[in-house]
Structures are given as structure tokens and as C-alpha cells.
Image (tube, rainbow over all chains, first blue to last red; front, side, top):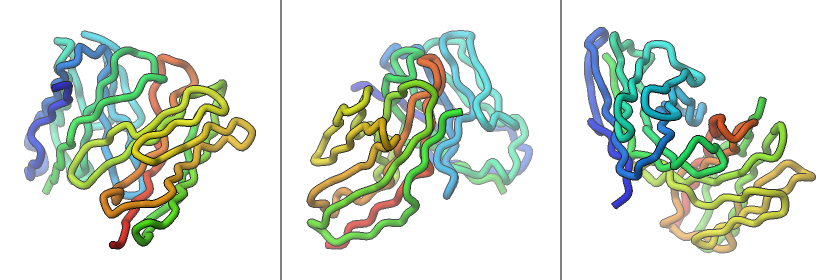
Length: 114
Length: 113
């Protein structure tokens, strides 16, 4: 089954404790992206990747890192999480770099930073 | 730059009512337009899309027509069901094919039995 898988689905942690949210897709997609969803703000893009070893900042990259060492994986790293990063996070992928193609989303990761 | 504006929610309707969720866009060039749906506890799923002016996207009884003259892509359904309760996002492709997709802020829809 074609899917985007995120882990964990839920995490409660404390300020300053490094965490990684993993994202994996099995569709051989070139493009992958991370979003955060906050009430009233819709989805805002954090980082995206056009292909292996190619990543770039989205609209709200501060406090986040990503890597794309393999095509299928695109982990999101919070080196020193803070409470303002409490949010619902989504990973997405699409077949190529053309934004006219639809994206496929994971089921989300709800992070709470205390 | 490109932007998407959709009606604020929440929208509450009775089952079998007619639904319209408004969406307008600003864009350089001719973007593709999308509606995504997010059911509780899940990620976004593509509901329908349209790639050029006057195209009509449709799926699961929902429709939306790409109107260039009014820069709109309103979502409609003739008779909603309780199972349609979800958050709906309008989205536009970016100013070039290699750029990102732009999402509206989402509209929460609740259907009463």
C-alpha cells in the first residue's frame, strides 16, 4: 500500500531535549516536505526536499533541521525544542518537483513541548 | 506572491443540506487548484483538483470549478452526510511548477444528523 509513515504519532517531552520525528515514503517520490498545522493558521511549510541531499527552507524553518540521505526518508529534527514548537506536524511527498501534482500526507505527529 | 483565502469556519449544517465553502486565490500565471480533506486524526487527502480555467474537479459528490474571471474555486456538495464532517483545505500550486503548494487556513465542517 502506498503510504507516508510518520513516527511517533504522539510525543510529550520537555524543553531542550533533542527529538527526531521520522518520515518514510514507499512511493519512490522525489519531493518531500514537512508542515506544521496550528489553529487558524492552516499548514505552514517548515522544510522541503527536491531530491536526495537537496533540502531548502520553507516559511517557518527556525528551530528545525532536516536531512535527506536516502530518497525514502526525511526526518525532522528539533535540536532544542521549545514550547512554541508544540504543534501538529505532517510529512508529505509527491512524485516529482512539479507543484501541479498532488501531495500525499502522513497521519501526523502531535508534539507537546513542556 | 501567491495566496489562498477560504471562508472561516466552523460551518455547521444538517444532513442533506447544500454545502458551499468559498475559496479565492491570487496567483502569478495559471496555478493548479486543489481541495484537500482532513478527517479527524488523519492526514490530508486529496479530494479533487483542477489544472486550468473552466475545469471542474469532482469526487465523492463534491465539485469545484476553476473560475479564472473571479479567481475562485468554491467547493460544493448537493447533499451532505454526517461522514463529510472534516476540515477542508483549499490549495494552489506555486508561481512556478517547481515551487511549493500554498494552503488556505482550512474550514471545519460539522454535519448534524
